Image (cartoon, each protein chain N blue to C red):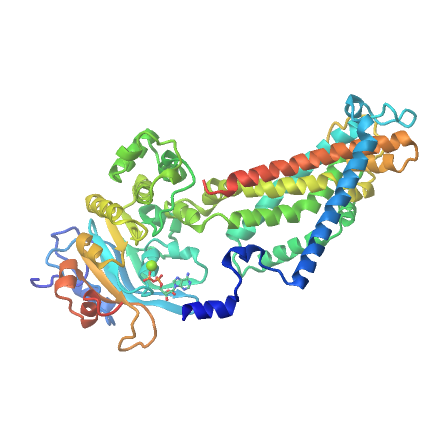
Length: 301
Length: 303
Ligand SMILES: Nc1ncnc2c1ncn2[C@@H]1O[C@H](COP(=O)(O)OP(=O)(O)O)[C@@H](O)[C@H]1O
Ligand SMILES: [Mg+2]
C-alpha cells in the first residue's frame, strides 16, 4: 500500500538523485542559461580587473602613496592627498553616521511604541532616504553647511553628504541586529531591576555589535567609492596639501580617479588605473573584515 | 482545619490577631470567587495580595478576578491546564507584563500593602524586590561571574566585595562547587540545569524578597529538576517563592499552597477566560479538594 503510493507520486526516480533530479529539457535549458549569465557576469568583472591591473601595474609604487598629483609630471604624480582626503571624509562620515544611526535604530526598535505617530514618521523617512539618489545628498549637505557659513568644499561637508547617504543602511542593519538579540536577554536583564536604558547599553547593544559592525563597514565601504555627491560639493581635483581638519579642502580617491581618467595622456590613464586598484583593494579589504566579523559571531557562542 | 481566623492573609506578624478584619471583609464584598482568601489555622504574613485582579491583552480578558494571597517564606504553586493564565498572573506580580504592549490590569496587587500598579510606583523598583526566573534558562552571553555580578552592578547595590556576592549567590543556588574553577568562562558552556541554577543565582544576587518562577524545570531532565526542587526548598528559608508548574507532582512535592486555575467556562461567565478555582494548602488540594473541577484536574480527567 505504502509502496504503491510512493510509486505513483514520485515515479520510478531513485531517491539518491533527488538533488540533481531536474532532468526535463526545459529545466536543462534554463540551468544552462543561469550558468551563462553567471559566467558572463564574472567574466566582465574579471576582464575589467585584469585590464585595469595591467594598465596600472607600472604605477603601483611608493610614489603613488607619497606624492601629490601633478599637471606636468604625471609619471611621478601620486594620490597622497586623495588617500588622506578619503581617510578624513570617511572618518567624519563614520563619526556622524554611526552614533546617529545606532541611536535612531535603538529608538525605533527598543523604545518607540508601535502606535507612535512620531516613530512611524521616522520610519517612513528612513525608507525614503534609502531611495534618494546620491547626488541629492551632495546638494543637501552643500545647503546645510553654507547655511551655517562653512564653505562647501570642506571635509565636514563631504562627511555630512556621505553620512546622510549611508544613514538608512546603518539604521536598517542596526535594527536587524537588535531584532536578532533574543527577547529572553532583555527580559532577564529587566527582571533583575535594570532599567530599559541599562538593558540596552549593557546587554542588547553589546550583543548586537557584530551585526552593527558588519552593516556599518559595508556601508562605509560603499561611501568610500562614491564620487557624485562630493563632486557636487566641489571636491577639489587638484589638491597639493594634506587635509588637516574638518574645515580643510579635500579630494578623495574616486574624485582623483575621475579627474585622471578624463585626461588623455597615457601616464594619467595609468595613474587612474593604479589608484582604482588601490581603491578596490581597500573596499574589498573592508568587505572582508565585515564578512569575518559576521562569520565569527554568526554561530552561537 | 480549626476555626477560620481571618479571610485574609494580613500584614500583621504571625500570632497577632487581626484587629479589624470585619471592616476589610465588608470593603471587599462582594467577591465573586473567594477561593483565594485563605482559611488558616496559623496566619502568616502576606507578601503579595491580589484582589479582584483581571488581566487583559488588548481587549482579550486573559484572567478574570483573581483574589489570592502569597504568604511569606512559603512556596506557592500555580497549576492548571495550559492557557489558563498562570504565566499571565505570575508576570503581573512583578510588572513584567508591562513589557507586552496592550496589557492592562484591573483590581489591585498589593506588595506589603502597597499597590504595585499605583501611580507613583516605579516598575523597576518592583522588579528589584520581586525577581523572576524564566521557563527557558536565559543566561546572558557573558561569563558565569559576570552573569551573577550584573544585577548588583546595574541596581547600584553597595557591595564591599563583588567576589563575595558572586560566591554567596552561587552557593545559595547550589552551583558554586560545579563552577568555582571556571567563573570566567562563558555561561553558555553550562548544562541546561546549571544554566537555570545560574539564573537563580543571578536573581538571588540582587537580594529580592520574592522569586517568581515560570515553569523553571520544564526544559530540564529529571535529575536537574530534582536539584532545582531541592534548591527551592532551601531557598524558602530566605525567600518567598511563587512557581508556575504544569507538573502536579512537582507542586505536590514543593509547594506549601497551591492555586488551581482553569479557563474552562464556568457558571457566570461563558468565555475562555482564566480564573482561580481553588486555593488552599497543597495537602488539601491534593487530598480533599473542595471543587469538583480541581479533583478532575488532579486525577487527570481533564487538562
Ligand atoms: N503576549 C500575549 N498576547 C496576547 N495574548 C496572550 C499573550 N500571552 C498569553 N496570552 C493569552 O492569555 C491566555 C493565558 O496565557 P498564559 O498566561 O500564557 O497561560 P498559561 O501560562 O497558563 O499557559 C492564553 O489564552 C494566551 O493565548
Ligand atoms: Mg505559561
